Amino acid sequence: MKKITLFGIEVDQAAALAPMAGVADTSYRQICHDMGAVMTVSEMISAKGLCYQSKGTDALCQLTEQERPAGLQLFGSEPEYIAKAVNLIQAYQPDWIDLNMGCPVTKVVNSGAGSALMKTPDLAAACVKAAVKESSVPVTVKMRIGWDAEHINAVSFAQQMEAAGASALTVHGRTKQQLYSGHADWDKIRQIREVVKIPVIGNGDVKTAQDCQRMYQETGVDLIAIGRGSCGNPWIFKEIRALLEGIIFTPPTPEERMEMMLKHIRMIIAHSDKPSTLAIREARKHASWYMTGLKNAAAFRSQCYHLNSYEEAEQMAETFLKLQ
Ligand SMILES: Cc1cc2nc3c(=O)[nH]c(=O)nc-3n(C[C@H](O)[C@H](O)[C@H](O)COP(=O)(O)O)c2cc1C
Image (tube, rainbow, N blue to C red):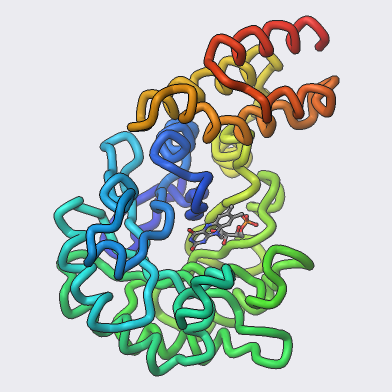
């Protein structure tokens, strides 16, 4: 497998896991890493929340060896808080620190953070500079291609982040206004790749191994990050490796899918500081995703959303498998 060095870290040039708040927690990241994701990134962490020791922030910053190389992602729009947060977050020993400039969630955007920073490139650059000054590890940026169709500033924004000291850019090829609809504009990603010297990680709409191969060919990116395409399908990372190496990939059997689902639920419960009856709620969506594409999946989805214990999940998996 071809190797690539990104901001001092050598990885196979296959696919990384994109950050997903509420989805890609430590259990998820460990599973994807195990399946061949070459890098993982934490859920976004509020810079201010970290400074004020908000509830739950410490848990979001915890990294295990099984998910490295791994970055911790901060969001915020005030350089002073970014600087303080970068200082604090280094205690968790991230391999790099990523700054979120792509989140479209109203609460985040209204505070001037996430994708709102694409409207204020000078402030975004100040955040990068503040982070770089305080950080002993590389600082990277995750961005979109602009605010809306009338304000697509991906290329100049990317150049400005590079000049401010970013060590790499992950580009989700959509505007803020698109949220997750429409198509990711891979050509914009290609244009960014052409003008910056730092590594560019392409992101958006890679749902199959073939999509991944095509994105490499069409954009020339250094690496590809996958978000939703891995939900219920962490095997996508294995499949990508197989395709790029010319090896035959055998898709998981329904039994393997259910085994992975149960393992994932066990991990979520084990990592949670909540009682298992509450922790299982975090696992419900994952359980339903593991059924995608299998027979009778639709009928079982609603059952997934009512799971109250691990034992119920085991029983459900057993019944489900009998119908395959
Ligand atoms: C549920 C969910 C949560 C997300 N959370 C984050 C986040 O915390 N930080 C971030 O930079 N991007 C986040 N994203 C965006 C993804 O990292 C990615 O850019 C986007 O989903 C497009 O890639 P995909 O088509 O492979 O999913 C999130 C996406 C989803 C669907």
